[in-house]
Length: 239
Image 1 (cartoon, helix red, strand yellow):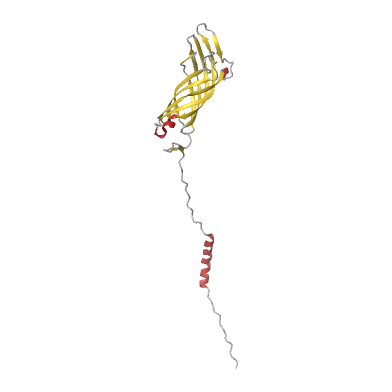
Image 2 (cartoon, rainbow, N blue to C red):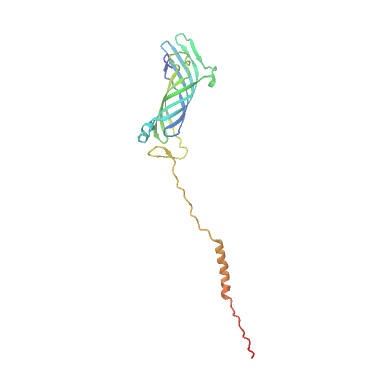
């Protein structure tokens, strides 16, 4: 936290899902479960359980800076977002054992009665391509609470702040149609399929065929028919 309490390292774990909307912009959702710990020179110690959900927008600095000339095995992103934090813990005077501030413990509005508050997130994220859709990821971000009362110690800054740094393994699901990149703009475009026009088969002329059949029947009859010329009788002349 800011000024009065110095944060200490604690272990946590989480799950992230990301969607690259374009080569430049993306969305990233995080679920984090862990612990927070900090202390001061005056023997105040802060401890808290943490359940956090965050939605971030990301911008690919590698794409923005170098475009097609960059090493595409490495991507560096800036991330910023909002989320909800659920806290359950206390601040204790280690000298006297007195609890000077307590939060959660089934009295809050969050998960399992944790104290719930809005968080703002700002940080950096990088991934390194290992092949076969696998990546190593590194992320470090600062989380800003909505006020300066999480640890019960008032400082000169209006928010309590803690840092989250993580190393993980990511798998890229090969969903949907495979696309190819345009070498100039690096925009994602689908392959163009040329339409094929089926060959048209000649349709038989039914009337012509029927006429040929009739003609083949009539023609032999005409050839065999005898044509008789009429005889002209000249009457005798009477003198």
